[in-house]
Amino acid sequence: MRTLLLIVCLIVGIAAAAYIGVTYWIDEYGDLTRYVWEESDGMTRREDVYTLLIAATDEGQERADSIMVATFDFQEQTVGVLNIPRDTLVDTEREADGKKINAAFGEGIQQLSNEVASVIGFKPDSTMVLNFDGIASIVDAIGGIDYTVPFDMNYHDKSQGLSIELKEGLQHLNGKQTVEFLRWRHNDDGTGYEDGDVGRVQKLQEFLKVFASQVFQPKNLIKMPKMIRLLGENVDTDLTQAQLAWLALQGMQMDMSEVHTDTLIGDNARIDINMGYCLWYYILDEDMVLDQINQSFSPYSNEITDLDIVTPDTIPGAYSPNWIEEKSYRYAMAGLEFNYEPPVTEDGYTEDSEPYGSYDDGYSDYDDSYDSYDSYDDDDYDDYDDYDDTDAYDSDDW
Image 1: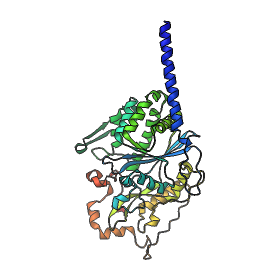
Image 2: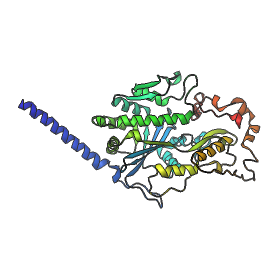
Image 3: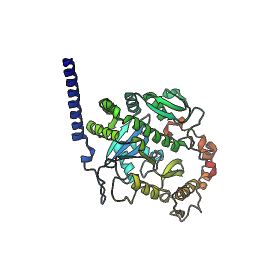
Image 4: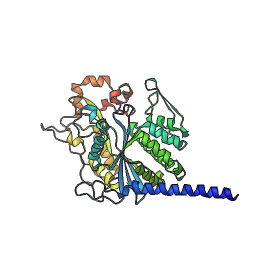
């Protein structure tokens, strides 16, 4: 009996020593609050606030399918996650759909980080690129997650070897099923989220909260070495293993179900900025984005006052009735007055005198082929998979 007691004490002692050693290593080499992060001219960093750019790639890994910036406040023990719509129009020399921010990833994660900085006013401190295998491995490592699927999801694509069959209601998802949920955009019959890609993003943000709250639990502490190893195998990041472990420990001390999520404020508009070739872009509302960033996501103690955002004001002829209506609605919801003055082009025209609808006169074949945006199936065109065919924008209304 005494021998057994000694063995138990020895095992407990070794485990305690290992735990102390690991936590010391994590604190010594992983503590992100010890670093002096980059500051813009005239800006002052908030103490113990850290920002991370998280990008998930598409199947070809040429574009970013999801772009998020997480702001961690380690003093207040809070996390904010800001989604940047992948179709966001950015000031770039790239052409056609390359002017969307997700295409920046084709030139590397640092290029994407630079373009993200242009629209949010600060460059994230670190970067992380996820792939689906990494997400699946983490889910399987903790034994799956519980999530309420909003409705039946049935999509099949032989060319991709993809078969998604998820039932509505509370499900215990394994890694493979989790990836299927993340990849799903619409059913075989075309039904999907009511408000298209915006609705999809909202559901992904909701899922992110559930995912984080179930991964970052004290009971999973023993599984952390395995999760860190899996992250190292499936994630491209400039964070060290010690920093990843430290970040995971902080997550376990926070209420991840209370993560604040938001999407940059803007509106979809179809714009001709490529010599007669119209595409759908997500155009940001600079004034409202500034308020949004300063209130919830900025790492600075003083306010960001200027952004490098491409707005309809900077693109003569870019306004659409849809944009103006939506902008007016957003301001009304915020209790602000919206006064619209049509931009003036170089030849003296205003949007009212040279309406955007005149585009149809020169390119009527476009309208003949695509009577409504809703009928356009982006899945038939790999080069334009940025478009979500569930968005109900009717070009005939223009």
